[in-house]
Amino acid sequence: MRLAVAATPEVAIPTLEFLLSGTNPLVKVFTTEDKAVGRGRALTSSHVAMWADDHGVECIKVGKAVEMAAHLDEIDCVVTVAFGILLPQEILSIPRHGFINLHFSLLPAWRGAAPVQRAIESGDNELGISVFSLDEGMDTGPIYRQSSFLRDPSMRSKEALEFLGEQGVALIAQTLEDISHGVPPIKQSEQGISLARKLSKAEGLIDWTRSSSVIDRKVAAFYPNPIAYAQFRGETLKITRSRVTSDPVTEVLLKPGEWRIEKDHVLIGTGDFPLEIIQLIPQGKSEMSAADWARGARINPGELCG
Image (tube, rainbow, N blue to C red; front, top):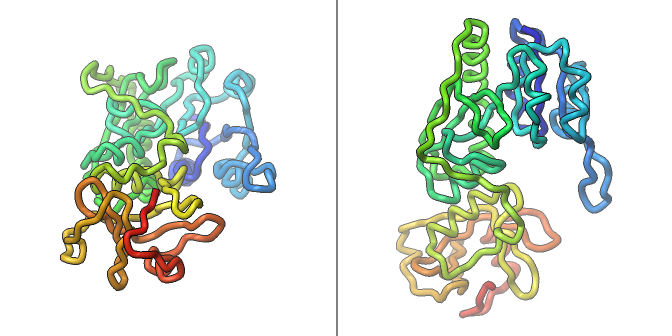
């Protein structure tokens, strides 16, 4: 079976590594066009494009799905991982075995662009992976394989995606075996459907009147992008790691957004209990420990974070 991969972010690299070393030839890779990033707005290739260049695999950069058509006739199956381009049926039907997608949720839960982030934000204890046959809908196609995993509470979206990307390799391998043996996928359930819309920067603003657990989940879900944030002394303060704790040091009464520094612990008031801030990014600076930042910030008693 001659394979191609359509993918963009770093989470696809384990799948690419596996397919390159497998028995089915990896013929080519599709990825999105170079994008302007950073303050200098320099054109930058996707992680997948850089991987293909390093490994000598043909890489085709596309801005629209129709641009793939001329490159699919020789392909039997395309594996997609967070490709970022919706594919119409006329494209999906070109390969003999169509397109299969590695999606990071237990479908039909969390269909959409940010399944891991929304699962963490919502407090799901379980994360999952689905490999399914793509159709024109938003993650609505029939499923070949699924796996579920208990989420380590310390996992933010970054760590969860890295873990699931590695675990997804086995499901891709099993699905390719299913396809080669003619095993059909199973229609998705009509129950338990939820949508995982893309995270927006505006959503990242922390409301300190919410509970400590809700804020902690937001911090975990929004890392590494777009990162949860607050306003302090007229500047943006990005919060990259926090912790809900029952340590005696947290047994203090604080107003929502009120700081309290206890030795090496940086606490902030919420709608219920203080939340410990562990890592943050001050405006214009690099990530640092909250304790180091607090020592330099010289926070006044009763000072509030907006």
